[in-house]
Image (cartoon, rainbow, N blue to C red; front, side, top):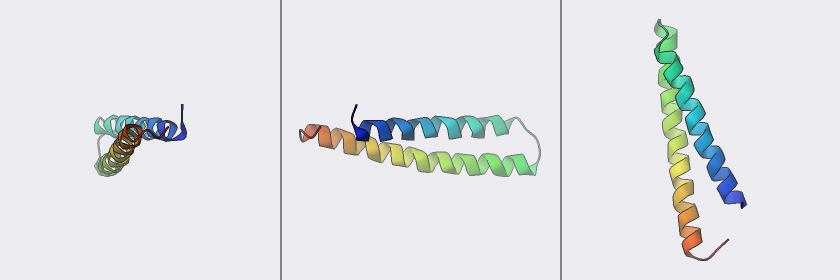
Length: 67
């Protein structure tokens, strides 16, 4: 497994972890939990963007023959 694939897997794992934390806050009441959940969902979107960019980069480099 090359370095880019490892970073890609870490980025996808980060998305799953942040998503789980955000969802777990939905069940809690109060304004503080709502703010934390909102923050986690915004962080998830950022991590998803990074993961998608890495996937596109990985596919592009594989298509160019770089390994």
